[in-house]
Image (cartoon, rainbow, N blue to C red):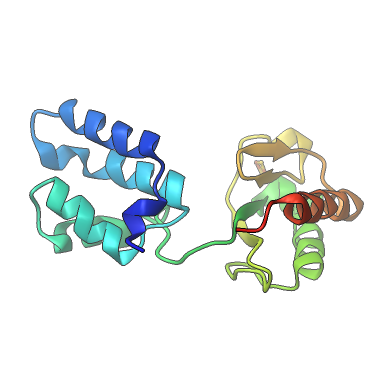
Length: 168
Ligand code: FES
């Protein structure tokens, strides 16, 4: 299946709209990549070619952006994305232990996709809630004061939601 089929119609609509906001099409490259990643979870190689074509550029022009900016992921991630803050305040209050707990729960290391395809755990820098660390973001939801027990509880919630998802 062509990877575009995985993007939501809403994303495709936003992409077409964003392009109209810029007098020069190429200026829409970063917003387009953000939209693709927000929906697909990463920037697949096919997306690089597709975005280039849309903006009448060469794939290398887009590839350079994707490799230059660290926020763009070039590897697929699991269905759920667990981001654990490792900046100073959260590190001092136990962020690394929290990450260990998630790794144990899903049997994978940071940056990998868990064997069941359910999650990718990642260390990230400050999530702007330093007074209430350790802080974890799961997809778009922020969780504060996460200790190992809470990490276990959040993992259980993810597993329960996964078991209820209708099989494809
Ligand atoms: S240090 Fe973790 S949120 Fe700022």
